[in-house]
Length: 332
Image 1 (cartoon, rainbow, N blue to C red):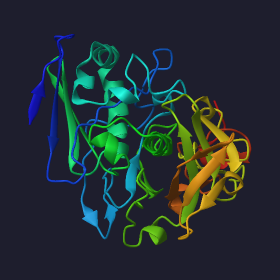
Image 2 (image 1 turned 90 degrees about the vertical axis):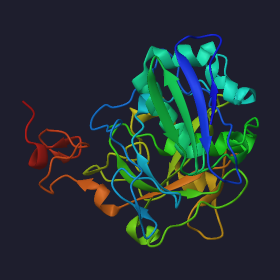
Image 3 (image 1 turned 30 degrees about the vertical axis):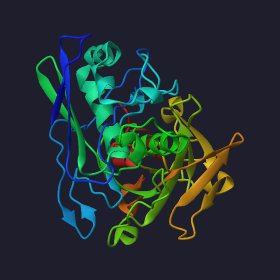
């Protein structure tokens, strides 16, 4: 393990760790956030500190667990992403070396709100790094470790500048993890990494996560933005889910629209892989993107009238998710 102490800041240090893995290590992220928006974790129910890797079970994961079979834990709040690109504070796709985390720009950004920055870095690592790769960063005496999962950007993880394909697939992956409510929910993540290798499919994954949800694509690195298309029928007004930034009602969720533009049906812009389990490309505004496709469990879609007031439902006088009297009562 190598220790790098920044010359520009007395508060932080970076270490890198790896095991035998063909993709190596050396990845350093660029930033997702701007000060005006922030990189906030938790709105409700966010379990940032106590999250664990969990265990395998026929390719699936335990609660709050992660697995390289394409399942990931959802919990990045909407204000953790910015459409202003991934070159904030002077870090860019060409600055991806271990020394990048030791710059004054990264230290300043991280120190503005370490808890929020920690959350954003967790999800960057999950998307870009492989399961044997991790990044450790120490700031003001506190050490943060960010572990890889999906390994979607092997070149970037090996220290090279992020290719266009890596920019796109990491952007799509980050968008797929956005959760307006900041709660953890297991999802199935499908697609291909930047080299074209398919994300492994776990045993019973398609039957357990039996509800097609959405396709996410875009490019945060160059400011082109993030986009999402429904991969299933729109929810009715009586239905809702904490995955509000994915499967939605026809108009999309206004809170998610701050960072992700809803473009309608995925089939309008995206082409299925030959397996027909995920989309291989999406074309929007004349640009071709490498997307990430997600699936959820049917029980994670809630209906007003089922007797339980869910996080995505509200009190009111009607039978819609936004005004569900039967489950949540009349508003005081």
